[in-house]
Image (cartoon, rainbow, N blue to C red; front, side, top):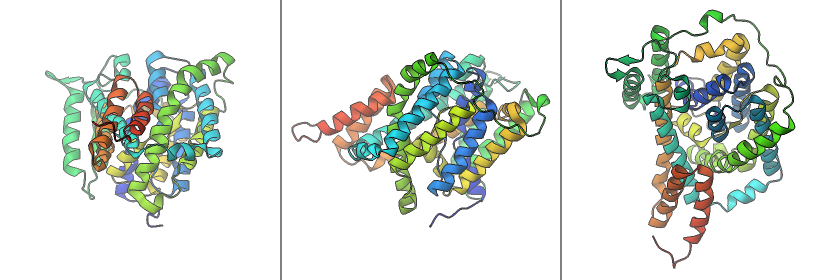
Length: 399
């Protein structure tokens, strides 16, 4: 393969591209919903490694955002979250295993795919700005913009905003620098600030050892958990997963890697995510997917091969097994605003895929998908976009 395994500073930098998406929701679901830290981060590590080895190119791993955001906002129990993993696993394995997703994907017009990518990009940028301003749901629940820093402001300027602006400027200067990759600078300076100004919460309890995940740490979910998970978590998530993590992700991988991405098919992505969510169910982790935003971020920050997956996967897995439940103490060192910077540049990279839309009709569809997404949700935008794209094939309609 053209993109054989590589382990260098660019692959390391690109491997950090998903942190802005993973850490806020993962920490939120551990602290608020009671998910198991060892099972969650060990599952993330295993999924990174397995998906990288199979797909052969850099592959993202992210939380399922509809489920994660709803769970953190409402405080649903861990039983419902792991039950949603089971439902998602079943749906994706059936859709992928039967080949139905290939038929579905064949009839999704490209402007709709661009609309999903544009909408996801804008959502990532919005969430990144919120993390810098201290207004995300997790920060509101913790009642602090930077919950794990001892200092919250520099005079009238919120510290998180100052950190975010500084790191964003550094990213703009270094985004194409191969000797000093931007993501390494963002994460490195963020960790340095956390060490200097952090509350160091949990560090005193860190006792390295061997902490294996527990199978079904919350027991088997109840019938009520499965029913609630199906109705309020799994069904709302599924259209977004098909639009963003399957169709948009496969399209983006083909743009970036061409023939090297031949294994990144609709069917393979469904089966991959189905197996990953079965793993999450048994380990008490979070529902996971291959989001297009994560791929855009990893690529923009330098990842090109599966080496980036092995690097970050091994890091998550070793930290989870070595530190156990106190793994959070390490992640608390990274300021929320630093994660926000990663999200902003990931979102911008993904949104710019719109640039290949040439005519008014093709541009109108993504803009409508974006508008409906912001007003309602991505699933509604995705479905409405498909209907509009087919309607606009008529020469009698114009925009």
